[in-house]
Amino acid sequence: MSEDQKPAPIVFISYSHDSEEHKKWVRDLATSLRNIGIDVILDQWEIGPGDDLPKFMEQSVQRALRVIMVCSEQYVRKVDDGKGGAGYEAMVVTGELVQDLGTRKFIPIIRQAGEKPILPACVSTRYFVDFSSDESFDDKLEDLARAIQEAPRFEKPPLGTNPFTAPVPTAEIGANASLQSEVVSEPYQIYELALSYANAGNFAKWHELIHFEKSKAATAMLQWKTENQHRFPGLKKELPAYFLPAVATHCGLFAAVFAAIDSTDDRFHNQLSLMDWIRKPKGWEQSGPTLWVALPELVLFTYQALLGALALSRQRPELAYSLAVTPIAERHSGRDTQPLFKQFNFTGWPDSLDHDCTLGWVFLQMSAKEWQWLWKLFGSEEDVIAALVAYYLFLNTVDFISAAKARKDEETELRELNPPLFLNQSDEDVRIRAQSLFFGISNFIGEMFEENGIKSESLPELWKLWIKNCAAWLGAVYHESGSRYFTGIPHRELPTMLFRGPIKRFIE
Image (cartoon, rainbow, N blue to C red; front, top):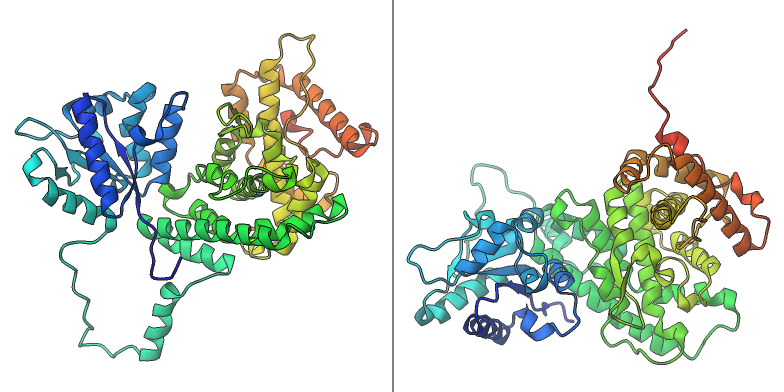
């Protein structure tokens, strides 16, 4: 993509299926928008039998730059009633969702027969485009397109200089202007640029940057494959170093997304929908050796690990939780979904690393060492690794809750672990830092236990069984006695940390 070429803005059309005539009108509107360079997500073009409609709606809203709300009378009633969770009703956004994501993202358009237009309460004070009259369709289409493209009919004139103050030196003006206009390539520069857009609430510029980085990453990884697929390593232990440059093609994209997480504007914080794009990049071959076919899954493994680590380093357990339970379609079926923490390929056993969790941890440690731009976000190489360990302790805790709820009775053993425990190659200082990060979210963990029916009186015994499972797992994976690992598991004393009782303040 050239510097002057901008990606087409993506919009999602939310509407109610009032009638076949209304559906055709919406389809014609979408076609007209596409004819003038606006990419449209429309259920009539993209939904087929067996598809998950609520998930389609959720992902489409997250992916789109703007959401067009086609406000027929029936649509308004459904939004105000909060109906939007099942079947084709999922095409109707809820008022709660509008409030969560910010109303500027949503453009209401009127398609009604009455003289006085009505709008959903969540956008009742917003400017709308009235498409009720077919005779003015072309004019209203231009108004809508200009709003999406951020191309007003009348340009705001440039601000003149204050004649009553001393002029700013020309050299200084030029230096400051170039900061925003230059093409940045170093990941931390991309992070800073993305952060400036997000903090300013500039969705258009931020989405433009994300689309550019996605395109750049996909192209670069395909190029890397072309240049390296005939120079395959001879030893299994060489796989992490071999594939690290391939995954590094996504560092700019990672940096831009991490900036959204750090933004002061919480509308940018949910960046989970990117995972579907990462694992299925455009143009990637789905046939051939598994090590190559599964390379996008290695990118996803890295992304989720670093995103979860960033969440723990920022004491954002709600983000780590949302990441852990995000449903992802299994590779072979393409339909069946499982939460992330139950998917081996994405959390610890990437097929491009020969389905070996030890190599997975080597790969993450190598990333922490080689990608020094991460040090500016976390503090140091050791801080990156400690945050990774803390995130996997959190995944392990989520996995425990799932195992405890699935236990049939007190005589039944807890099932084995899903995500791995990345501990054996971490030094004591890293474990202490990881433990501190993990116990910093103990209140959130306690709430998770309570909300999932794990009572404080039953937790100690259940947790003891789980830690035994963890120690046995570590022993089996690393071919040593499980007892060697028992005391070295950082969250072993979790129940004690959660239920210390009232603090007594005696001073002698």
